[in-house]
Length: 289
Image (cartoon, rainbow, N blue to C red):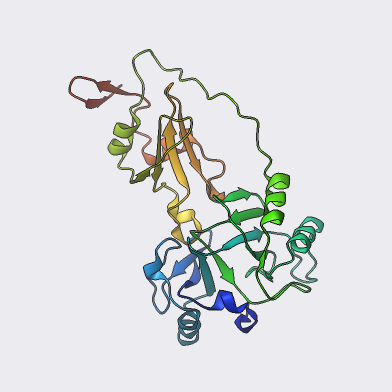
């Protein structure tokens, strides 16, 4: 798809917030690259970002190396990105009725995605975390959006303040689910997985421990399917344990929507035991047969 970047809003053109990207892997995914190189960029690593000018020049110098450019939404940015997928007929340009309604309600800068079947919409708003479901993804800081400059017909050429509209969309598309009791741990009395020891034994990279209102332990980790994430994004993956011993795995990326603790446990090493007995006196772990 030929880019039309001169039509981008000025505020999305300025700053050192841009990356190149290309398709890699099977199935193909968008992988972020540092402008002018084939080294991976990261949506949470400002050292890998460049100016839009540098990214455009890199595409001119290496037309076969990159497929496009993107802009990272940084923590200090006032933006939220709304990604509507598989909502546009690439031949007629017609949007699905729901997508057209969302675009109309937000009334902010919106452009055609690189696939020509989706819409990328930018607004000014505050959002604490990402929201994802098939066909609709809403991202705050720490993510990137591809840029094409192909503005939707009747879309504004500016990014507008739309906090109320965003909150309305979240209520409509992501209603608060009734909280269900956590699944009780059904292992033998006195024998349960020590999550810290388990992750260490499996060689899982723990990025940080994070607070949680109900779980005993929650860690942000580099998940085993990070290569499937757009741009190799290492964020959005958590694993934890409730006081009763129950374990959970959760990843915000679409490729991992169907994956829970059993899939994670099988992927990291199918030979690892389901139970790890902890010797309290010496804190030595051993595998149970």
